[in-house]
Length: 300
Image (cartoon, rainbow, N blue to C red; front, side, top):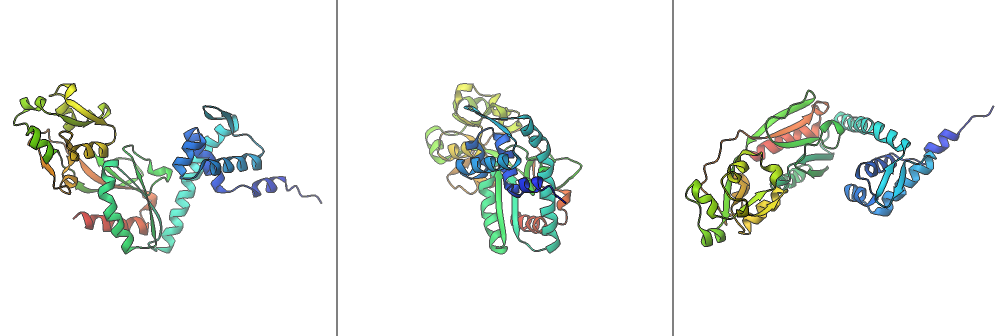
């Protein structure tokens, strides 16, 4: 009796990492960008893709000078893998939860502007739980937790909503305008709304103008008074600290820098908070529970 082993032989050479790397190449479009995302070199990314295609005996990508384009088979990969990645993430979480041990990887997504304040807390958390490995994704975009890319999201703004999300308020956020002492020594501070236009401003780019405390300033100054802009809040913060002009900082962040002086500007009241968000599949996760308790204690 002959048993066909072709399918078994093909699958033998494929690892789950091969699929994940190929999926990242499909998302990023080039080997080099996928390598940056995955923190591996160009040759390693190519080796994973070639190994997967050779094992499947199917071309997933068409190579162009501009990047990697999906074949029809590659499009199937893009359709099917997100669900598989999410299922593997849920499986990993459930296996960790069975042990109840505070160990393994804890993936956290947070605002770029908050990551510097988060790092000292994470250091103390690691000191208390040395079996934990931490991975932080700093971005102003909302990372969908159902994808498994992160276990915990630290979000700012209105309360997040979603049928599968567990949301807990951490703290109220307060943002003010600050200037370095060196700037104040040279230019002073505005004493009224009419004087705002006499000063130099450090602000986020126009995609952030919808934020009330940014909009308030933009509406009351000439655009040529904005002498520095960035789509990345930490860049804005550093420009203020360097004395380039007046700009927004979170009060909790500004208090860490003694060279900064709060500028008396009456801003519109905004109800914003920092939220601790995780997927309901992780409601029994020892890592998430422990991190929440530790984090709230540090904030208080």
